[in-house]
Length: 205
View 1 (cartoon, rainbow, N blue to C red):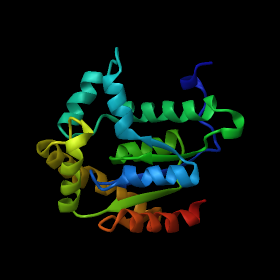
View 2: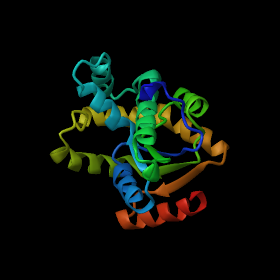
View 3: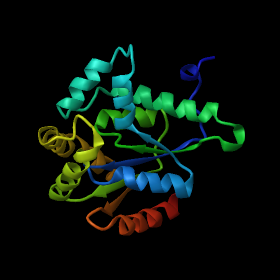
View 4: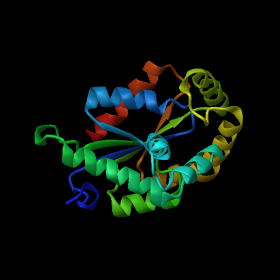
């Protein structure tokens, strides 16, 4: 049986990590992986990898959406996340089996949120990293010097901000109504932000 045809296991737990572009999600996720043993799945990284994969039927489509700062159709993103979860779960040694996942940069639209929770698993909590666009822009322009990412340019960044406000904030509000959101102030230093993260995780360990 191939990995992608295996059932989604019932004993996995998922934490969604949301926040605008450049808010520092990746940095905080790396620390959580190290200290808590999560598997970190970045929706953006999975999409970029698929975009660059030789022979991918979705490569050009993904490239177009990312360049425009738009959200890739949910069918593609959810399938990539599902494949990654199954691969980590089923291919590790039993003693090191991966059951705890940080899903970073997802869900970014209501349909993604509803479909993932219905077809994969309900999330335990949503960590929402929050700070002003001015701070995010400064961080992204600094990152652009070394990232090599095609979408780290002023035009794409502004489109991504607009998309985030219009389509992702309603997702945060949706989970807030379910009392699942922990808001974290990312205008602080990396260490101060991580202290807030650790306090939030105490309730979900």
